[in-house]
Length: 359
Image (cartoon, rainbow, N blue to C red; front, side, top):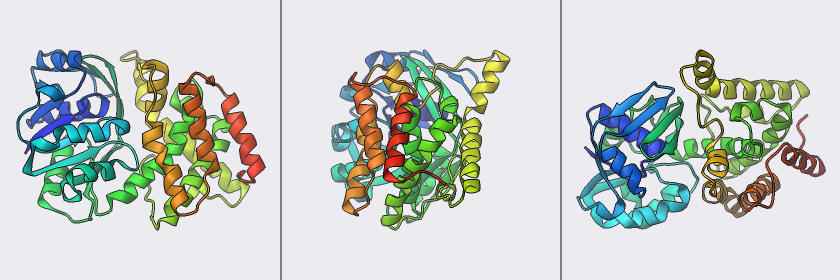
């Protein structure tokens, strides 16, 4: 299978690199010309959780240079760039070609399907994480599995082929209900978005009880939307839905312990490397924090997590906490709000007024 990675930054670049190192036929595509040139000329370096890797010359293109027929497209652009990216390569898809959404966000598969058809769209979800640091420099940050599946739930030869391919990147799960897994990450995403309200490492923020008192109701609110759609949200290595519906104070304490344990699990690799002096991570927060603080650009909250508001409205489930959280992020991006714990205090006050405090 010929693989074309469209969007060769953190997720796309890491995935393409491990497939290439595994002997697969990979073309890297990115609109950053300097990054493309580095990939072409043996200057792609990956460091972080899996050690240091330097790749030899790889086939790399800017979108304008891409001309060959496309079989398997791994789409790894930001959610807001999905439509433009797919429309840019649609005419190159082979009759049997397809696009895999290797992204975060609730609506990406629908956007892709609008452009190329539902039968040519496959869902996937990476739970590993990384960072595009500079042209030719990627950082592997978080170990985690990857999920893939046909939108209609069938186990097809191409889905099985993708399972084989992506298993070279991480532990891969071939699913018959990829939509439920995407909902799981978006519900968990309420917690991830909130972590970007303070300019501290992800695990430091979410290990603090001030954050936990807020993220619990935020995630529960998102889960209520999923339930209204009849989604049985699955658990995973970093997320389990049931603790977010505590009935007693003891249940709440167990939820807080669960949050601490999962964020420490995510951060363990970084902490061990830094203690050993083998690697100091550049990226220490979420992708949202990374965009706002380091890349000095808007995050993908609007296109990635923001659609939760519209989807909630369709089924009549109010989401005032997530709506307020999104507005806070937008204000931070626009320069109208500063990062800090006062943002959690403000959300905690709203939770109290709405009667949504945890027991």
